Length: 335
Image (cartoon, rainbow, N blue to C red; front, top):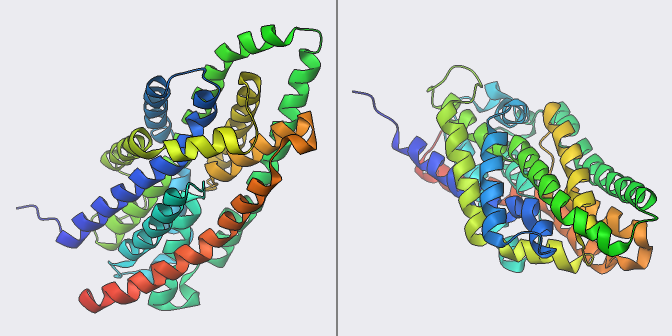
């Protein structure tokens, strides 16, 4: 009779809880601007994000492979069945705190921080794949907001140039329709990147338990993660929608189109390279870039400072919680 270890079942369920909190955080980014500009109702936006995230999740596995085997050395953590559990506890704890405060921090970096902290607690710094962390985490951490800001600024300036002789009401009329396309593109790219992160840690857990032999993501893992993420968006995403759509810069449909298009391009490019970038960082920076194209003081830079502090703290804080969770769980599941 086929038997599944109880701990593995608990880890998979915890991973899906994380994906739920990820949906409340990051999936909301894909629909924040389209809801805030009143182009679509929340119900319509959620339905669109849910379906396109699911499709995006099925389009690739490069990011999942990075999370599953590119950040820690598998040989160093072989047999450590609580590693993924501890990483998820660290990520969920940070996600819940920042969700409660309405801060759009990065679920991606919360998960990565939890994984690195748990691996460090288990086998020391040698367990961390330093080159993988630098190339797949640190550089994208710096590069994706910069790329998002520049892309948002450039796209918005191009729109200003193209539409310079067109009446403002006419411009917004057309971009109200075009924004549904850009929001859909961003939701698809979000699924291609973010939905794969939990797939990667579940796949790592399956590998540590000997249920699979290679870091190849099973279809049921893809479907379960995408579904949990979409449920999180539907139930808990509106605090983040409010911050992204109103507090940074007062958005109109044309601004939403520019920010979403810029973000979708950056995230899709990162996904093809297997880099687990933050949708939160990228869309936030894109909105800053779009707002700056109008005038610098149109952007609430105080909010920008708060967001950057949260971004910088996410990796180490989630890592500390992940390490502490490993030490605690090791009491009950030694090894």
